[in-house]
Image (cartoon, rainbow, N blue to C red; front, side, top):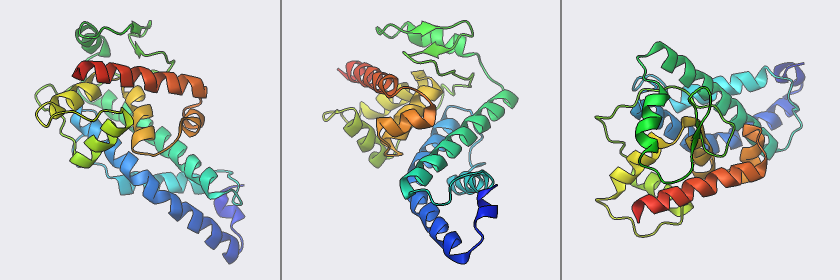
Length: 229
């Protein structure tokens, strides 16, 4: 039975809708940032998708599922994050498939030569960073530098415990970060940094062990810090 079918009384419906609405402000920063990264790396056409549209579609999906209408606000928020995450990953893959792409193999060979960490490439030429997540092929727009707003830069620097990045150095560092990170690994970073979720919640959304999520974050943080030293 779907959520819509379960909301038979006005009281139950109003209570559930309030909990859904309370989750939306947490979703917007994360969705907006993921759209921006997808646009900048060439996965999505610019200005075609909005956070409002993606979140609205995700809420519709929630109402069509057999979800507990008595669930606590936190459980509803995590379920919406999971739906949003799945929705965007499918969207990105579909858009990348129909656009002119270059194989991640070509990107990886170029980027791996610049890194000193031990990274591996699996049989499908996916970039593996101590994780079983599958990367997707995407088009890297090398002529366009990724420009983050200052508040986004601050959020990332705070998460990575960096305090002394110069204004001149900043654009190059963030451009490199999002261009060499596999899209599904930067996904984990953004759930933590912009979704404001803890590692336990991210592990539930991504269906990974919490320790694996922590290891991924720590390795990216170490690599990021080393590249600016």
